[in-house]
Length: 200
Ligand code: 5GP
Image (cartoon, rainbow, N blue to C red; front, side, top):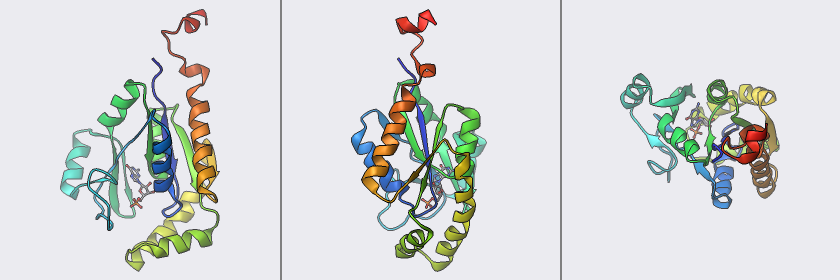
């Protein structure tokens, strides 16, 4: 059995990565979503265990001490982390895992999993990003902080393996799905128990 691939999607807040992940999951049976833990407050409609596992700062720090995260980072002054166990279990079962995490997290995961596929989603324009953020029901201060952070995040796109522009949602989803398919067919991922692998 092939080991699953890790697909990491990063994008500035408001570029549409949550919707992209939802659509990708709907069309790929071989893909699982890694739900992160966070200390930020839930937004209206966000359910615990679905969008995120919402934890207190104490609970989050306890998990850090116990080594329960594949990576964690402080983003916009809140903690965010990827649960280690879930990801490793899915990969071992041959399933692919997608996660929507920030640039620090993506680079930390690449150090541990060099074959992770780093995909950056760009908004069609900075103006589009601003208006999407402004539509969210969040404090103005938080929106301003997110916009300021976006500049640094955008600069990191060049260190990623792939860059997808989300000016057409269906196309962006299909492009990312193609990336995952091509990457999972890499010769280096060939199942060692496959008869052809023995010829190498
Ligand atoms: P939001 O609060 O808008 O849902 O997410 C804020 C930022 O945190 C986004 O860039 C998101 O991708 C990132 N993020 C979400 N989960 C994780 C995680 O587990 N680890 C890291 N490093 N970043 C995360």
